[in-house]
Length: 227
Image (cartoon, rainbow, N blue to C red; front, side, top):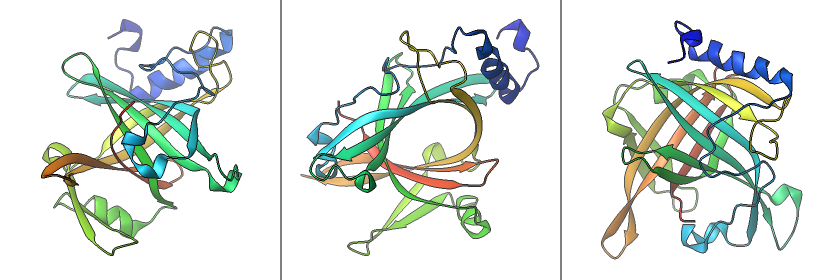
């Protein structure tokens, strides 16, 4: 750890990075796909028919940083906006994310997430994600079927992340000065083995995120990203 950051919280370190962008040099951040805000990101049909007919571009990049057991762990979300190529209606846009997480092999795992729901702070909902069972259930709107997800690696506590929100990038892939901001996010992660036919299953993920300042809650759901 940088000696200048010794004893500082992740939030304090993040704020230092953001405030340091005033020198015009830009803010370096974890960018494993080497994309820029405004870049196109093709989403192959193999990710699911619901993505067909949409053109996706990167609207924002978010670097998450957590401290676990004294070590820092980062991952990156590419926040996507999908435009329906048939209607071109701005109200018909599909919000999605590609979450890229370093793995133990030194490479990255990527998950394509679609926004399932979002709403303002709710004590009743918070009680659901803090339930000691670690189970989260989703009822399918079309079929009424209920799917159960369990916390990844049997954890029960939430994660707290200091998030660098990059709204604009420079040509060399840094956060543009004045276009980066900090956010505090608390989140819970879940997964299940989903039947994909032919006797095979695939991991399906659900991430529940709450902005610690505003209380706004988002639920993201998806599977492995096929580029």
